Image (cartoon, rainbow, N blue to C red; front, side, top):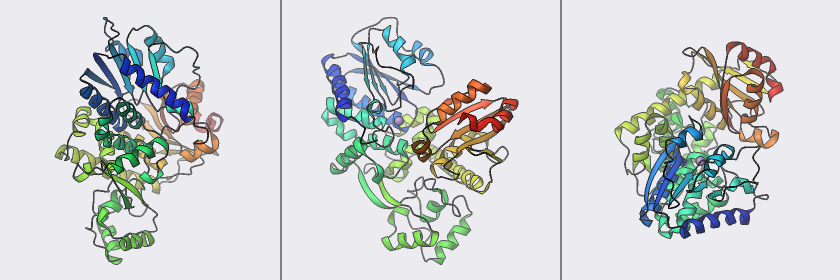
Length: 458
Ligand SMILES: [Mn+2]
């Protein structure tokens, strides 16, 4: 990827958007952002910029549950003013849908996104009032090279250098989107990570990485780590983990981040795990919120449960009781679900696909996240596509979460979204997704046909 990325073309788009934004001296800006940790971090960065510039602003969160047309219908006012601008962060690359809307407006639109554009879109008809900045069209990887919040941060800092103080927000976005240890960051993500580290706005540490539970003691760390999920410890009873730790003379109550180099070595050897790497701490926060990965995960969880709690918690130094309970509920359920899944054999398996029917074993509301983290943790054969789900009683349809690993994409190319389109064309159903993850609902007869035809769609 790095070899094909065209940095100067991307920076051309970027500086053009920055210059336009400065030259137009807008009086009002509407921010539209995505409902996840990366989106909320981007939102806060842009809000901070506008506050510093003394520009009046408002924001809206888009969760993709309605079309862009329906969503924007409630936001675009009858009165159009060239003194108003829209800034989209961490979303807005559905250009086939958005361009006709933007074409009909007078306001300027800035789209700062790192999601891939629609496969069949061609760039010949860009509206004059659209400033589209998306590094993926110039060959950058939207996960490893640049997050939505990294792009928002670069934009804001270019306009107002003092935005650097809010750079820690970009690290939240990176941690939430990339699901990797910080030593794996590349390109712009790496550059801003090092910049913020040098400015002491974040702290980089290395050690045992039990993401999801870095703020915990080692007993809970092994039990509730979701990245990696540790088979044999994850979701297992306390007693089992405690006696293991006692047998290797490690205090189960030791904090994960306080383990000595020798203790880490012993744990890795005796538990047969390989999880050592870099992680980021936010020096101005405490407890769970001090840990960038866990903070980001909390935002992602809250985005689905209580979006206003998610938006307000970014501002807090210390987690609320309410948020802490939700986080613990989530992580303990996920660990148990991943344990259940890792003990299951596929319900049905073909040359290219694995079907896991988990109805009655994992609650339907957890299917999607269980599927995602089983993919990230390679809990199923990574050369195949995972279809996880079952009959949803309330709708009477089969609900499937479809996942593949990044390794699969690198080797085989066809992503989940392409597979879903092929299934819908042949068997009907509703659904969609992106390269690595998506979902579909099918009638019972269609689901049965899918099981026999699946290899033809992949
Ligand atoms: Mn993002």
